[in-house]
Image 1 (cartoon, rainbow, N blue to C red):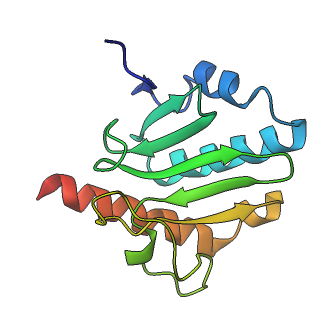
Image 2: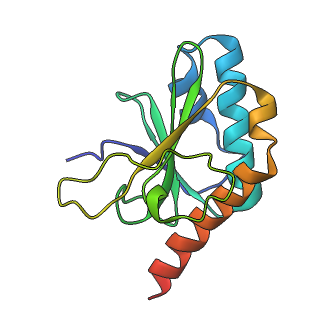
Image 3: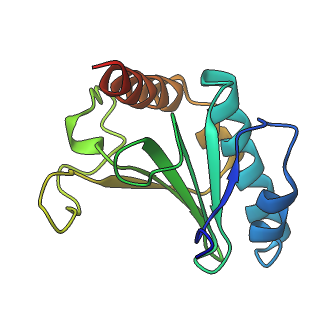
Amino acid sequence: MAAAGIVNSAGRANDAAFRDAMSGAPEDIEELARAVRDLIFEVFPQAVEVVWQKQGSVGWGTGPKKFTEQFAYLMPFKRHVTLGFYRGGELPDPAGLLPESGGKQVSGTLSMRSLKITRLDDVAQPALRALITAAVQDRVEASEA
């Protein structure tokens, strides 16, 4: 049985699957998505990227497993991209970028949170970089435990 997602362990330069997944979005939204992807790889160059073509989403983590190794995901919409964090409710977020409540995995073990990004300036916020850094640290520490 084939995997549902396309796993990219080769890094930022291998962007074919990512480009395909974003190709249906408006041009400005594709640009936002690329900027978020660039930021993810700046913070964590060895990120494993998984593109889910049918869902039109992309995830990043220490490995390809969505709920145990991935730390963030991105989904494009008509007027924004959503950047989500699988354990967002447990991350330090002093700037309050994430909502205080959010989704949970069926088992109730994840505290998922997401934010809408509408402008390139949003991607450049130091608070967003800090949030991504905290999410990476959380997954790296979990994979080392």
